[in-house]
Image (cartoon, rainbow, N blue to C red; front, side, top):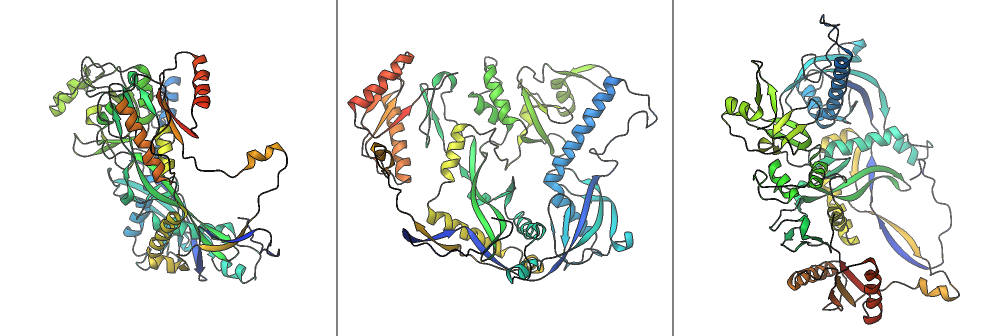
Length: 557
């Protein structure tokens, strides 16, 4: 969209066939209100673990060596980064605690929205104690952090200015020439703030956890791994002969934004699908064993190749885990797994100055006999955790770096919808969002959100005329019906090939492709040299009439 919408003055076209189109924009009607903007600075209280520590010399201690000073600076920088990440997750809880603890300032009928960073918008002026009523510092605010220990914070709240949201009405009544980006961002913030609770937020998108489902399943045999819903398989030398849980679940969601259009302000809704670490993994050892392709990580004869550990660490890096062997749950972020270090090997200096192994410490302190599993190194201030004590935090989304091509392809398939399904899902989302927090919507001037998408008139233009032999390459596409399957590994059992064929047919039917009953050709051939590849494709071209051939290609390191 252009920053300023210019009404279309061109005459309607006449060439081609007229069609009616739908767009995923939903009209918003607004009222004229004025809101107050506050800047909120959140810092950790001095006695908290995220607070900056003064240098030793400033605190009356001995001057640090150059190496110690560098290490202290690195630790302080990492602590600051950790605090920024913490605020991204928990600033909503801090603002809620601020409002709840200061009812004389934040009255019960006061409506506000928070952007998760520094900007707080309210519908009324706050009666602050400093700066002529425009600012106030709140010290030692206690906040109960979900899944963590209570924390104490210092907040500085300062009034910035007032914002008149009637710009929208003035623009569409042709009284002004533009709507500021700030006004649009406030309306967008209202929607984001409303959706934060009912939906799970990830990378500015919102996901409905009630739609969470397994992404698919894989069946492994001694010869082959089949990824159902994906037309690939892997060579047996890299795999393990038992049923394996999928790495990922998928969940449906959306991303929204507020846009200017010719017909008024509109909410744009676009469907999204994301992957999460599957619910079938509750502990880190279970997940690592599945990724490594072994039954028992602690088995003395178990050997896991180095390249597999590299792949495992790509997936587990930055995962959230917690331990509960002490007085309560303590959360950590995984940096990596250390395959050569176990609790029986790694030592540290105890309180008495004697070196003890991690296994000995846990035996003495907790009466626990630890298995010889690789240790887990945490991010930030490095700690080394016994893997068997690490539980996975639920609802952890998979980034692109953690999802392999198979998972990404499956997510793409799950996010592809027919137009009627797409708009039906958008309608349900708009209806649900419209019902969220009516008092907040009314206070910020959101009157109605239409559940009907905007309808446009378009034209299908005739195909561009072509001349000469190149014309043959511009014919309309057709859906292939004659198909074949070629597996480039003669050792694959016939029953496994049959499963492969059936999975293709199911996917084709789901996508509306009407394949012939059985593939022709259906062959197994082994590629022994580079030259044989050309012979195989030449044979396919000369001996078959298949329009589409699916290939099963073995993968090897």
